[in-house]
Length: 386
Ligand SMILES: Cc1cc2nc3c(=O)[nH]c(=O)nc-3n(C[C@H](O)[C@H](O)[C@H](O)COP(=O)(O)OP(=O)(O)OC[C@H]3O[C@@H](n4cnc5c(N)ncnc54)[C@H](O)[C@@H]3O)c2cc1C
Image (tube, rainbow, N blue to C red; front, side, top):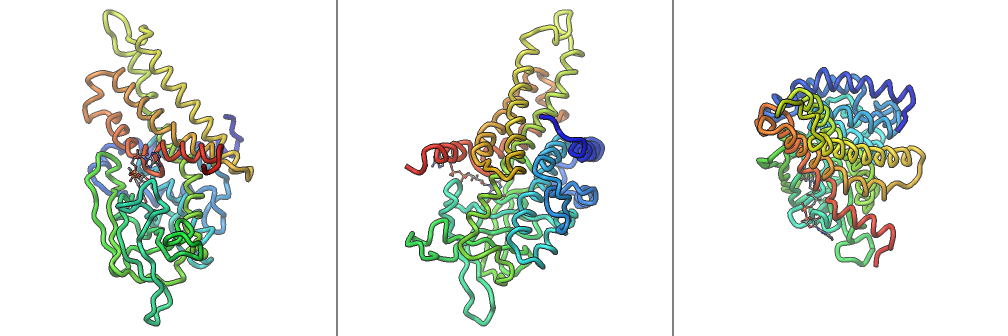
């Protein structure tokens, strides 16, 4: 993939920030369990969050390909900080496109400046892959309050106890569809500030992405003003699924970048480490698996940028997005595992970053859609719903 000079310049800025400010503290930050807000503001001040969003909302109008380059670079330095950055593209985009202009200006500007964190709340205890089956209720408030009352539970929500606001998918009704509760067409999106009364959280003890924090969010009659609804009632499901089409590519690039970081650290080791009187790099049994892993990463990466270029050209890219999300996290995990196998005993210790990358990437085989869900999308595009 060949990039323009302008695209390369933004990538270079992201690379410098990631290698100098993020990479050195990747492992130490894990123990803190929270996002370093100062670091986030630094990233925002450099303009590295939501680069593709309109300048009027605090972005750079730089296009999806550049957002991909930035996602890759940031995740190379720290996969978890990459998650906040990716949410800038996904959720900044949703708010910018669908919220009232004054709400979009306020929230998106602050998100892109690194001043607030936004999360997305779709999954419920009974609805993961089957996201159209969400039940969290948003009832119009009859008590003279112009808005909605949200009741129910969301689960598996990233940034559950750190997000300043969540984009919440809730059920508003059947919208005349005739389907029970309206199916996907009965779902509406809301921007819900997390300091509203009645909203509580419980964090899970996860294997990885510890500074992100994933958990449940409980809504006990949370009153949300109608001004915080995104778009019309019944349009929330489509808004969010279209957003995921895009963010799945960015997330794929992040997983591949984490794996590339491990590979880049492993090649020099094969030259330094000797066994039976020669560097292990002289054994093809050592170098070929790494060469294969890096080739697979490169192939997935090329498909990511193809999808992003289609998006920038205003052309459909749903299939490319689903294809790469079905492949990239597993490809990345296999590559990191190969690096561990190549290095040997030293790589199993917590001293090296490989084990953390493995733990951080692992959950993103499921987050934003499993490989099976992606194959369903591809098959439906090819055969229609049969
Ligand atoms: C690290 C991480 C971060 C996350 N962050 C968020 C977040 O911020 N916000 C949010 O809303 N959610 C989040 N999630 C939840 C995520 O979106 C769900 O895990 C995902 O949608 C899958 O749902 P599930 O885990 O309940 O699996 P299920 O839907 O219960 O599926 C279980 C298994 O069955 C398969 N399966 C299900 N249906 C079918 C089918 N029709 N055909 C074939 N196979 C099928 C799945 O592929 C999977 O292997 C996160 C998850 C993780 C792990």
